[in-house]
Length: 483
Image (cartoon, rainbow, N blue to C red; front, side, top):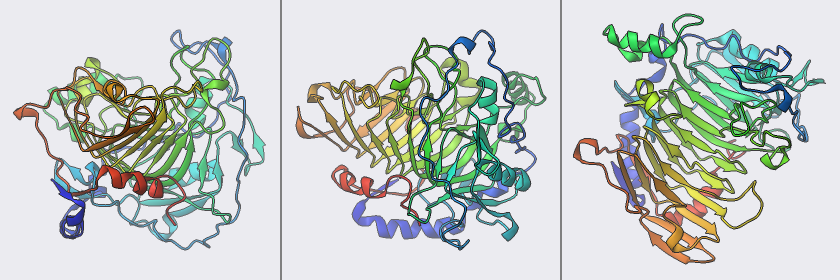
């Protein structure tokens, strides 16, 4: 249910009472939640080769620009914890499950020897491997990049698709809180050249078929929630993430590496992140393969009960994706992909805000700013929310400021869709140099769900006006604002 902003204090007090009686998401982690971390974070320095006809070695290209590094060796807090043990807030799909309401605790219950402060990629990987699925808090200070080794003294670029896929990715297991700690200069912790993976779609045995295995599991009368591949109960907060430059993409249109991928994950909270292409925008690509980045943040492959909040997305093309396939993904995605987006700011991004297949996606009080007429392809706005195959969306009170866009062009550009189950949109503000400021519902002639597909968020939330969002979101969205 929703409530007005004026009634927020009363309703959120009620939510806190309900929160105390909820199940802890850590109790969902057991035999059905194996570790998926072993292959990741270990470089193999392999030569580029064709992989199933993709990743042509002739199109290998190292990152053409590197960042100004902000490595650290000292924890400015002296190890004193502030927000690290906090459970996720009580608003969003992450607070729910098939068993009812949950508390998403992440690693909040970590023993003292499972609280880590890391300054480089190898320390981060080691902490994950030591703690496994135990509750753990990992505090990042400074700058993480898996291309650096030996305490950030030796740099080697990824040598191939395989080297980057495995050596350039960090896989977060269940019961994890990963947070950035602002350094002595007040700069948020940063991750570059490295993908964050939360979960993965696995077969029951090495070399098996995940789809065939899952379908047989269901055919045998087993509960899909007990299928042994889920990653659950993860919190990631307060990090700058530069989406990786793909040194050897699939083809000219498709890169592989995302900034963050939630794949077969449940009860996930992502908060106060700043995600962009960083120092390597797409315009730096040369040769036949012009696409060198994939998603900024993708929620795919049967993931469920996910919230993305108070985050800042900038300078990226394929930005936020929910569901990565149409009919061929029904076996994993139908009835899943419940995702909340709230308090986020999409600024100078191209598309997918989000693109949604299958998901029951709730969006409220987000800010979208961009320019549809600029010649700078790295920041040009192309399309916004895109309701796709069998999705069912509820969008409320967003603010859109899009330079160069006419009021008559809002539908089809800022909001569009096809082949969805249902779409509800209301309460938005649209402003532009070519349109002035207008109250718009954003329904755009799209069909609302029928009675059988009508849903209401099961959590309480304080809905602000779209006008309030214009000031509130920039004040809170992005890394560095949690201390």
